[in-house]
Amino acid sequence: MGIVIESPSKRAVRNQLYLGVDVGGTNVRAAAYPLRHENVEGAQAFTTSLKANDYPSLKDALVEVMEIAESIGVRNRITGMGFGIAGPLDGSKVKLTNHAGWKEIDLNELAQEFGVKVGGLNDLEATSWGIVSGLKASDVEVLQKGKPDFLGDEAIIAPGTGLGEGRIIERKYPRPSEGGHSDFAPKGEEQKALLSYLEELYGEGKVTYEDVLSGQGLVDIAYFLAKLNGEEYDEGLGFDQGMSTEVLATKIAKQARTGTHQLSMNAMNIYTDVLAQEASNLAVKEKATGGIYLGGTTKHDLPFILGKRSRFLHIFQAKRKPQGFLPNVPLAVITKDDINQLGAAYFIGHKPVKISV
Image (cartoon, rainbow, N blue to C red):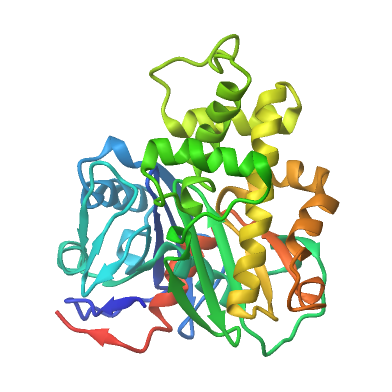
């Protein structure tokens, strides 16, 4: 559940903008949206992306964002900031789960520093609010049309630096989840061997779906396969020991998409199989008759998934019970780049619980 902190300033502003900020483990992405009749509109006034590790704190990163806004003459129009953050909220404070340097964000401090209304919520909840704001057909790639229940619940799974999961009750009320930290349940001998390999890294009985469905997970899968084959995965690929997990994962995914390295393709095969399995788990756990959305970095892997679409759907549907349920669940990949920023901005005007500072 998110929180909104009212602005310490009561200034009247025409043509207001709300700033939506996606705070991930790697990047800080911000976009400003016009406010019309308490609704955030999808057209951006400006957008920017910063590397989180380049700044000692989120506040320092936001100072640069606001300088960009000042340079194009819209700084004074920004009256609200919404933050989608990879981490749990505790009152007005958020503990980051996937950032080595930033441990905590204080929303009260940001409201005072920038003199605007501030809202904070889980990053997957921000994605969910972006869905609630209204997606167009061009914002998604449908994998399975299904038979949607237009009053039914929806769910979302989004790999990235970590693995986010969430649900949307009756297509209107987003709720966060920490389901990505549930225990990884392998299927088949290869995945069982992968589990044993990951238990050597993370401890027996402590491997989660996030340990597979994330940037680090994809890298670990590749090294697992290299070990099985008695190979050194770095050799001949232009990799070096100093490369970040993000760069390694991006290279592996690109090699898989372009078919330029067999081991990378095999790693992505395992990764997307597990993604289909966990999407299926989420569909039955949440009874997501409104549909399942695949978010996060999945849009970058879309060409690979489309190339094995029939296998992906077969795995998604392959449950003994409840019979006939999963083929009717709509399944789509979110392709809209600013979904989290839009959702974080949209949230500010629609969250009823408010705290004044």
